Image 1: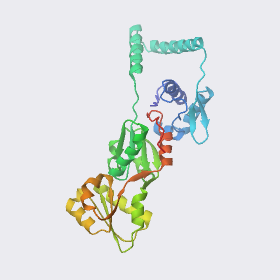
Image 2: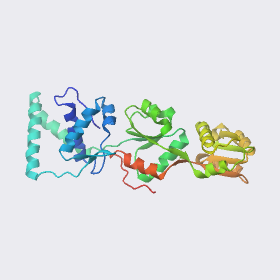
Image 3: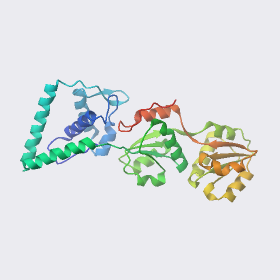
Image 4: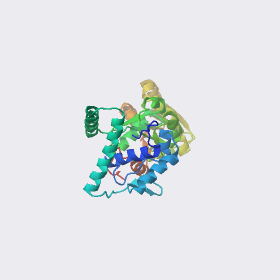
Length: 315
């Protein structure tokens, strides 16, 4: 939302401060919300983070924000002057703007049109930010997005590393720590939050109880889940036995063969309905992508103020 006009007569610091004054006044950054990190905004604008910090310091001097250790600059309740003071200041701002417009050679009719057009635009404006939830595989990304539904967010999309280039317009991305570098490299202007993704306890418990001579079957809905799930199951449980993995998309015959040879079966939520007839009498557990309560709470507190997520996490 912050844009820099390098041909403007005002300094970059002044431009940033002025735009944040407007955004705060319009409610894009309500009281208690945090402004974008100085380094993140500087990276997005391709400027020095010292410049951003000076702009934030200007806002702090004006009482609009205050620096909070560990959080950055937090929006403060603003005690404005009297109505008379505000009218006088507003008049001086409009006067200066009109002088510049007249200096450009614009007629009175042109200036009236510009003011009317800008008022209409501002009255109807609505910022809709795009949140991208990234997973190592499609099912993980979709399950993460379902977990975030409790925040009543809008415009939330899921993606995998293979589809990141379709989401260059995203404003914020959430991804497992293993993927954050990939996301940042592909979507260089997107603010990325790394999270600790894990596998649900039920699936890990079934696997950890298996003996080394036993066989475990792992069935997903889509092929891209096979490799990362196999890696995570072995890494988290130390299961040394044979692990047979496949997806519904690989074909019913292959899945049936895998399950028939297994002593226990793990399956993803998206594969459950297709696999249910083959699970009778077998040890089994549905495997789901998990985010801890603490991680969900940190996501909500880290989301930019433009995201409507006021509902507290169910922790």
